[in-house]
Image (cartoon, rainbow, N blue to C red; front, side, top):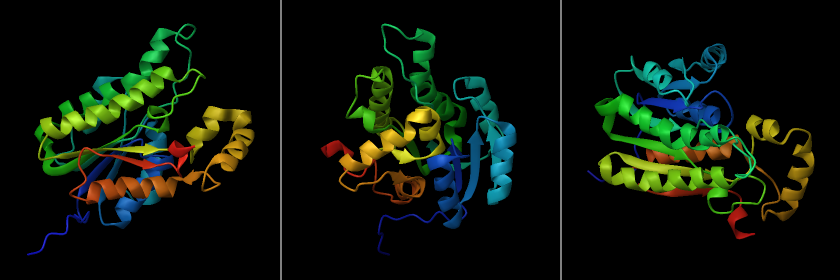
Length: 244
C-alpha cells in the first residue's frame, strides 16, 4: 500500500491550548471540519465553554498556562491525545533594564515551561503516532528594539526545543508554527489605539501588502498535524516578512 505521508484527522483527538480565539480557534474549526474530535483549552472557563458550544467541539477545559497544576487538571481526564497544539501566550514586552523581571518570566513560563508541564502531564497518553505543535513568531528571526528581547528569546527557544524533542519523543513528531503579523484579537489588544497606523505601515512594506489571517495560520497548524513527514521544522507563515 502506497504511503503518501498525509494522516487523516478523522476521529483523532486534538487538544489545542489557546484554542478559543485567533489562530487557535481557526485551527480548531479546521481540524473539526477535517473530522477531528477537538478539545479547546482557554484561560477563561466561561469563554472556553461558550466557544466549544458555538462550534460543536468535543470539549473544553480551562487553564492558566503559567500555573502547572491547572495544566495537569485540564488534561487529567483525557484518556488519549493524538495531536497536542500549544498556542497560548501573551505578548510580553518590556526592556530588560526597566521591566519587572517576574513579568518578563511570563514569556518563558507561557511557552517553554507550559509545554514541559503539558507533555509531562500527558505522558504516554500522547499517541506514539501523533504530533506536537508549538508556536514561536517572527521575533525569533527579527527582534526589534522595543522591549521584545525576552519574547524573541522565548520564541527562538520554542523552535530549538521542538527540534530537541523530535529526538526525545520519537516517533512522535514535533514542529513549530512561526506566524508573522496576523490579524487577530491579540494584535488589537497589544497595539491598542496604535493598531491602524502600525497595520498601514506594515502593509506598505510586506511583499503581499496585507496582514495574514487567522484562517491562513490555522490551516498551517492543521498541515503540521496531518503531514506525517513534517518533523522538527519551523513553518513560517509571514507573508515574506523575513525578507524585508
